[in-house]
Image 1 (cartoon, rainbow, N blue to C red):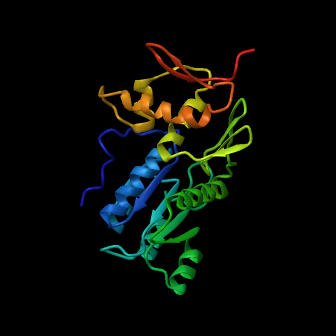
Image 2 (image 1 turned 120 degrees about the horizontal axis):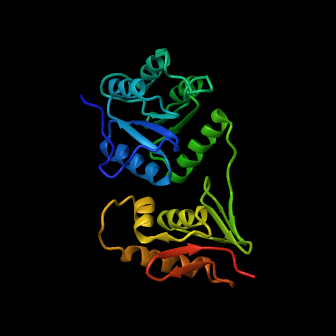
Length: 247
């Protein structure tokens, strides 16, 4: 079987963490691929253990999300073979690539075995936000990274937890609202066009209807700019910018 290919609109990003998702259930596999891509990861996906071995040999991932029940071999055997590959180490750091088991096998023996072999063990059905938090936690442990916080005036975002506050008040954002706010915040003070927003937030690489951007900007303003001063601004004929108030 040929390795899975990324969606047509995706591009390789060397600055993003590369994840390998291994799951033979199409719904779960594509859900993880889509959500993790939107969250800010570079994602490959495999259906079988052999396909996972081939993809990992071609390009070493930073983390593997591995199902236990696969059609050709179980996930524990896949992990054993992965770790036998000379290239299955963190580039420039040494040490094994971390593996997070994501599986319906919830027996105590399986969980203990998975935790002994891998770095974490999550059972299906899983909560997406919890899974993403666990991925970040494993990456921090293995890559020595610290969680980041983005601030624009009195607005604070924590990308790991999707926690957003302004003037000390917590606000609830949908995943798309958070991605949009995060993109504006990391580009604070710089005007971004609607096309750039579509490409980075929705990953649509086409010149279609851009009104969806206006709609979600409106949603964000109702939550972020309920307090004064306003942070999100329209630059007519160009796009949008989030910036600290001018003196």
